[in-house]
Length: 389
Image (cartoon, rainbow, N blue to C red; front, side, top):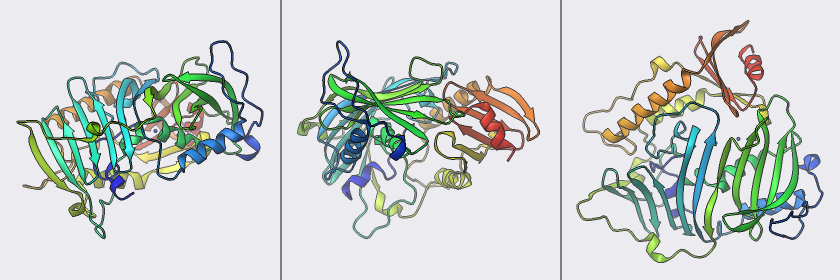
């Protein structure tokens, strides 16, 4: 999948992203009135079906569709992120992406914004990144055989799809998870099985995760995460429209519009290089400590908001991912969003020290005065325990 690596290496489309004895082997509950009718499948069979679909040779089936992601965590209204897929942008509201998949080397992902749209188009040896907001088309050259790829890939556009999100949950199914099936459902006009994952840990804020698997190919069509005590999903990502047929060839054709600024980026020449802010992100990732396991995992990392500064850039240096004026404005919006979140934090203290607690339906975070950030889909008590360790 060398040509397919373009969706993972250095392209500025990024997203927001958590068997045995636990399996309930009973059949699917009979469809209720109005639900589609599918052959009965047990939870164990559906887990196997989903695993086989994910590992199918040649990748996912040819398809095109629209994916909508919605978060309702109970946060205050956040400043507009202009359609961004940054982590903060994905904490509230809804956004969508459009995808076309013909093969490993025929892919298109479009991320609509309020007044613009960005596209990643891969068509055989041709790869483009189009940003209508800046009227810039970047022709991307893949690393040649033997060339080193960029050291640290950014999240791929597929991180925003139900398949990627569902796989993250399926990979964590073990004895700490109850697995069952419920009524069949209709998602994007297609009949689907509903596989339900239920955490057994009392300290988790997750009540259950519902995975809608296509009734024909078992590909995840929708993921819904329900917080305890809530009847509506706190987070949801799923297809609103999907067609499992080969997309038309014109979907992968791209010619820069007249008057557009055309740039080129040789990903092979990046080698092991990285933008300075990328190095900072990598170092931060190395500093992350994971405490606990399964549904009560807590991430602990150094964090001092007052010390966060943009990375310096050497004169004349131009690297993939460097901030343009409009991206700097986006960074300003993210700072405003972070401020809005911090304003609802509650002062807390204990034998471990003092800090501020941020509580949402699905995620809890603790900013300690000694410079730590603890976060997880856990109760405040779980964070306090970890803070004292």
